[in-house]
Image (cartoon, rainbow, N blue to C red):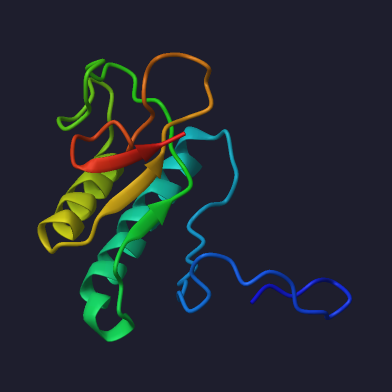
Length: 130
């Protein structure tokens, strides 16, 4: 259940017995070099989840993150964008590996108030949520 600041038990929610593995891969930054590091960290985390999916009982992956890819096709981003670095490709490979192993991946659609999906929700095998 959920605990309030005063220690009292709150609502149990729709999945009270669900387990969550939280992995922080970000260091909030506008610096492109640090963003590449964040993307590499994300790829490493996704690969860890895939490698440990049976041990930890992973049923799905939720990514509350995303961002635009310059030069990517408007319809999907299954292929690398024109200016995409290798770290982003590592994320794409890690997601494809999870999905191939039966782990659905859910990602944030984006908050840019446009009609384009952010990466990785723009991948055809990722479930996009707004």
